[in-house]
Amino acid sequence: MVLWKFTLVMRIDIITCLPELFDGPMNHSIVKRAQKKGLIELYIHDLRPFTINKQKSIDDYAYGGGAGMVMMIEPIDRCINELKKHSTYDEIIFMTPDGDELNQSTCNQLSLNKNIILLCGHYKGIDQRIRDHLITREISIGDYVLSGGELAAMVVADSLIRLIPGVLNDESSALTDSFQDNLLAPPVYTRPAVYKGWEVPKILLSGNEVLINDWRHEESIKRTKEKRPHLLD
Image 1: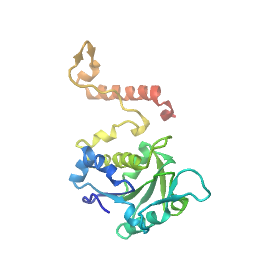
Image 2: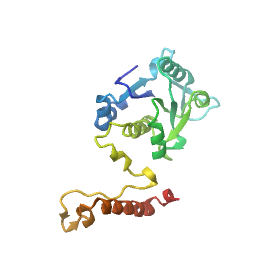
Image 3: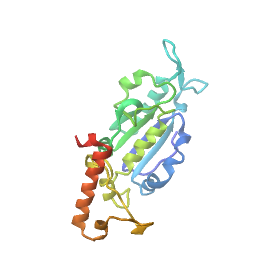
Image 4: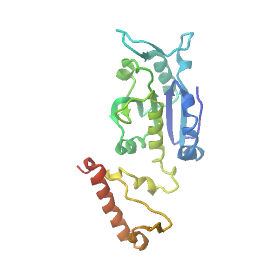
């Protein structure tokens, strides 16, 4: 079931058993603007219509016993096969805590794709055969467990969409974000120049672009050494 459809540059299909969770994040801010500009094509697919049992269940008990339910292979396979009838996908990505940890380099790489699928897990996990035969990549947003893959899929989608040319009003903004070039972003300031005696660094008020850029680079290195020293390795 398609909940949102927009024009073409990058197509993102998200498969989930809780499509209503995407109502807010996918309809506001940068993601909304990207859709209005026709720079992304975003589809949210409810998994339940792809099951063939009368109860519309998409999970079952695990073979061998144990706590928790497992997402069944058939609805997911049927959904992915239906999508493949209409598009060729560069990546079919499963959001899972034990996947490769998301970083800016991965976001940059994935943003160059034309068509991707994000599969949101739920319950105790998904049938391993899906991971073995249907998934091309597995991504984690951190070493912790969420109730489902929906929030992780939103994070990935947002991180890719903002990198698409034309999405941000100032395209250079994305190039100066933290983790580009393995450096954290430098401190930023705005008006007033003095507040409660707290002053903006005078170099930023000098109007000398070369000196300002040098200062920002030095502050990026300093901040990275303090907060993320492993990035400098």
